[in-house]
Image 1 (cartoon, rainbow, N blue to C red):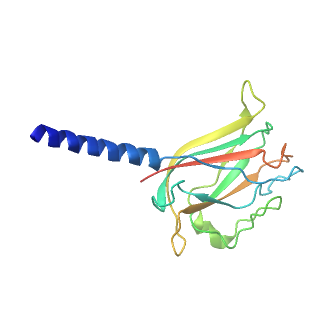
Image 2 (image 1 turned 135 degrees about the vertical axis):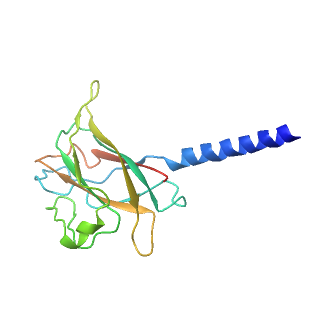
Image 3 (image 1 turned 90 degrees about the vertical axis):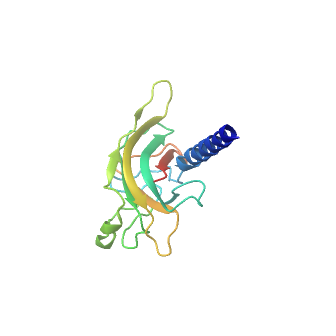
Amino acid sequence: MKNSRTLLAALGAAWMLSTAALAGNDGVPVTPTVQNAAYSSGNAIGGMQQVPLFRNSYLTHSGLLDLVQVTSKGGSTTPITFYVFDTLPVATTCTDKSAFTLGAADIAKLAVQPFTLTPAATTGTSASSAQLVQVGSVSNQDNPTTSFIYVCPVVGGTVTPASTSDLVFKYSVSTD
């Protein structure tokens, strides 16, 4: 009897851990609509993205941002700077194909330091990609709290996307 209770407890714990692991670290892909026209250096590309921390929004409003990835289906190698906010910015201009402006009132809303990824060609395909593996705690600070972070990607050079769905961003967050 004691062994069966121990076995049941161990199975229950393993099930809970595996369920949390499966649900708690899942990459959220975002394919913004971009224009098939020339973007200038400093333009937001795709506009402000409202990114759910997890596909299952009931999980939590915080986590560890552990991976950001960008893929250009058309093979663009133009650097992209990511501005990640924990609160919806109100003084920042992040409109697709317009000059990005970080408003002074939104600097405190940055969840992590802005960072730049430069996609590189991938052997055997016409796509290019880059990723950043990091660990940064993020928590939505909206009032009322939601399960989103906000991301504004900004190009660091002149680029013309190959199509209106050329870019795919992936954001992975682990439960904290």
